[in-house]
Structures are given as structure tokens and as C-alpha cells.
Image 1 (cartoon, rainbow over the protein chains, first blue to last red):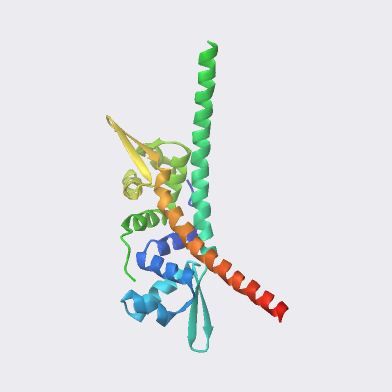
Image 2 (cartoon, each protein chain N blue to C red; image 1 turned 30 degrees about the horizontal axis):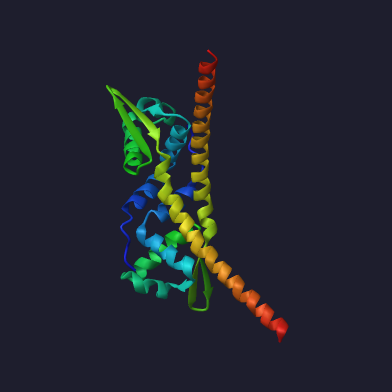
Length: 115
Length: 115
């Protein structure tokens, strides 16, 4: 089975797999913030928080706006769309399979009643 | 900000962040398979595929049924639920914020018209 070119999805899922990065996104979903504001509640160095933010930016989950020396960060909900779509696709395949199984069972029951 | 005990979500997202593991899940969503059947289309050793499968099992995305020497694998769609819920929660926060912003703008427009 060939591997599809889904590097973007790899990056998004890997970015989301860290609890600190998910906490940063939760915070940013609530309101935009400066990098320095974000670092305060996390009990970690500005460098460590900055590293997590860069991972989130590369994954398309956070946007940065630079005005002079101020770096403002915003949550980008659009970055979650590929993940939602992938999950919906797998569930779709799975549900169609359950539907097909149900159809076979109903057919058998009908055949059984006629016999 | 305290880290929530969401180790299960970390494991699921990390398991999904690999394209081979996502391809295995796509294959299993379509139909159950034996470990040996799964290895064939992936052009990798049985040991390598087995390792990916163990990661998926630990993440609650794959179930294994052992009958004698036969190991059958099935997709467990329920394993995707925590990821869907997390995404829905972030989008919910984000959309409520947009709604609140819209309400403020509408209010201002009404006040402007009255003035």
C-alpha cells in the first residue's frame, strides 16, 4: 500500500500529541495572546514555550502577527480540519461496513421466514 | 496551567501521527485482517508491522482476537472518540468567541443607528 503524501496531517497530529501544546491551543482558542503572556501560566521557560509555539505554527494551528516588537498569537481552527476529515472518513468506511453487514442479516432473516 | 491527565489522548494522537499506522487503520476499517495479511501490501517486515500494530492497540484503535495460532485484528472506531471530542471542544470555544464578537458588533451597529 503506497504512503499518501500526507505530511501535513502527520505534523498536525504530532503537534496535538503533546499535552502542553494542547493546553496552549485551548488558551488561544479562548483569546489571542502574546508569547510572553502565554509563558506565564505554564511554569516553563520562554524558550521552551516558544519551541512549542513554533511546532504549532508549522502544523498550521497557530498564526503569528508581528507588530514592531510585539508578537501576537492566534488559534487557527482551520488547522484542525484535515484531522476531522480523516476521522470522519475512517468512521464512514466503518459505518458503511456495519450497514452492509446489517443488510446481509436482514436479507437472511427474510429468506429464513420465506423458507 | 496544570496539565490534565490525558495520557490516553497523547497516545492516540501519537499513534495517528504516522502515515503507515493510518494506512493500517484505513485497511482495518474496511475489513478485519490477520497480522500476516496486513504485512503483505506494506513492503515492510512482519516485525516492523507488528510494532506499529502494538502502538495502535495501546492507543485503543485496534483490537486483537487470538484463536489458537491465529491473531485477528479489528479496527476499534471508539478509539477515535476522545480525539473527535477534543477537536469539537476547541471549535466550540472558538465559535462561542466569534458569536460573542458578532453580538458586540451588532449591538454597536444598533447603538450607532439610534444615535
